[in-house]
Image (cartoon, rainbow, N blue to C red; front, side):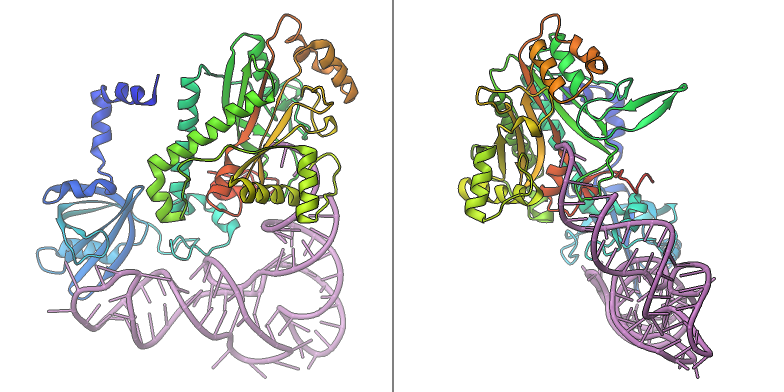
Length: 458
RNA sequence: GGUCCGGUGGUGUAGUGGUUAACAUGCCAGUCUGUCACACUGGAGAUCGCGGGUUCAAUUCCCGUCCGGACCGCCA
């Protein structure tokens, strides 16, 4: 089924049609010249001059000017506008005119009725003007509902919606099913990070750090290919621009693969499909507002073995990371630069990490390295993936090697005792992608409501 | 968790051991022939994060504390 089919189903519901049609989005206004229409929106600007008043309205799709002459006939409206405050919500009925003198879209509404549905307080706790937006970040997060009124912030969430829809579209076309795995766990899930503990009728349970074990369970259930878009919780006291204690993880797992390259093939296709849809659906807005452009044909994502990447960084950039079996932040940025310079690619796969840097369930290849990969986008890790070890004897040996108590993961090991296809998958952090795509300083800027060590409100 | 940095009108900043704490923006009032980041004039608005110390005098210097940020580590 394609997304278009879903739209058709909704359209056939006439009650829904009526609700959808009631609100005229400002974006669509040119279709209404000469007509009497009702507009709903926030008050963006008020300019009250001697003989005329201008009120600029804003909705999620754009802005439009309402023009009110000051005269006896319009006196009731003049008085309303005189007391009006910015960011109030109003319902305005009137005739829409094409008016070339108006710089804002060359149109204006001449109102016959002006209703204030909600009067905003005179002063706002944060500055939400597009051209300054200068309040500090904490204050903006405290007042996130106001901060999100900025048009450019809304566009970020439109992009997020398109990105997820594009992925779903691709999965639906390629025999993936969606799963919803539990987030309350009796045993801590595996990801290496600290877990949140909570009281559960007198006993201790854990919040899921990852759907890892359960998406693999779906492989043992014969689901073939699955995906999940869901929250993950990490009790890490991380103070960086790209960590959160709760974030939305996009997880994929697929059966009957020959190696981690099959998983990378899928992820590469998905990333390209996301960019294609972003360009098609939001390309113009993204370019106008954020100067984001998309390549017509993305190059193949380079796949660089871990130790070769280390060597390249040392040779080309004269930098030696502190960590022997992994990258530090600077190495990530440098290999990102290298991929852009040598291959013209914002994306780069780093593959075949040593077992020391990876969890026990990653499969080892003949070269003694894991059949694993990270995907970096503009120098930041957005994915970790691998072919999983599905042979229970090897899996148990690797778990023991990592010092894990086998009893604690027995429920997981059980998935492998009664037949399971070779499989692999990955976890993808959408906010990290969006942060770099929109060139924002932090995932906080692309998260609806951020959760971190110092932030659990609003 | 480690290192470094910061907290001054609603907001963003400047500044100072001394009696009126400055600027921009926002807000209020008035003026203004259609504005469009309107313009102009005037006004209100700050116990300078909190506690202690030094001093004749602390928003300023010192100590503590709270709150926050940046980078690193951990990872998506």
